[in-house]
Image (cartoon, rainbow, N blue to C red):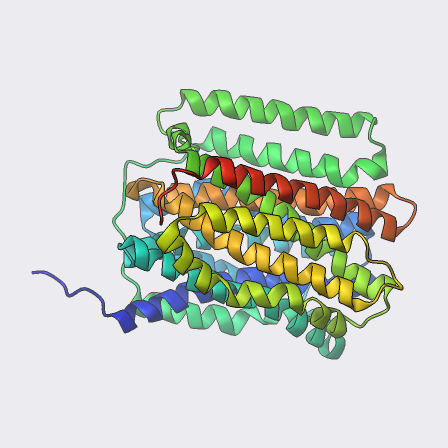
Length: 456
């Protein structure tokens, strides 16, 4: 007996439920960005402690996404999505009650596990709900727009909550959102086909986490210990050795964590690199600019959130249009122009000082937001459409692992440059200059490597 295909409205409910799940993951990241000074005042910890509070999430997220993508293919996307929601629900509640920076860092790591389970599952469910390439591109645009709203709302809502109720209230935002998404997932989403032969590559998973954690530790603690100290050189050495061992293990594994045959697609390979670059820029800017507004300009957390809106609003509105462009013309040009726009925005912000009018900051943030809103949906569509259907979960895990690794490196790089300079402002300028160069490189990469990418 054949079951009826889900109606358009039913698929829209599913899409909104899936988008809401990832909405709170991004909301948590952007909310934390404006709460860092308040967290520092209450729990202590210098720049390094704040970096760990941000990166504990992204390190675990990046390290586990590959395995979670494989588990999505093996166990079914619906099970993984619901499991991720339950974990985020529990960890968010505990995060609001922690008494030390160490406990907060631990809970952020637990949240990373939930986010890693949720993200590849949501993309797999979207791919199965929208088999038509054009509809899938448009649905990914809506998904990106809904999650973009989280980026826009996070600094404003977070700043308001921090100023009125304290920083602990920001973690309680996840509770009602997770419950709504959980109800939609439980009642409206169909389970995907499972691949029971898909197994976990435990050695590869451990090597991936060790490599990412060691590299992040070296970048974040280099200024504290000294870049030539035994501890930091050892951490860099461990990261390199772990990466080399990971390549060896994966090429010999029958069921690797990273299926290297997927990289035969130029679009997928370029998408991985582009995903890392775009998140280096986004996360680094979200780390340093809110602190600039509050510490250097003397703005409140809420006002700092409002000042970030020119960057966030395009990321909430424009992805729907980007999805349509990708569906008709492919990802190459949106990615190329998007990276170029973001690079120009970062370059403009290099000229911002305490006495500079907000107009220059406004222009830089607008260019950044517009560029990122073109780039992110395009590269996601390029990677998913370039992957075999039975490996969509794995591919989505790979692209998002690349993005989260970029987020970790962006915060670590920014913090290292700020710590290395005599003043916060000169460190901010150095980090923005490096970010502009990396984003310009993403534009060139997109133009050269996406020529044969599918439309969606």
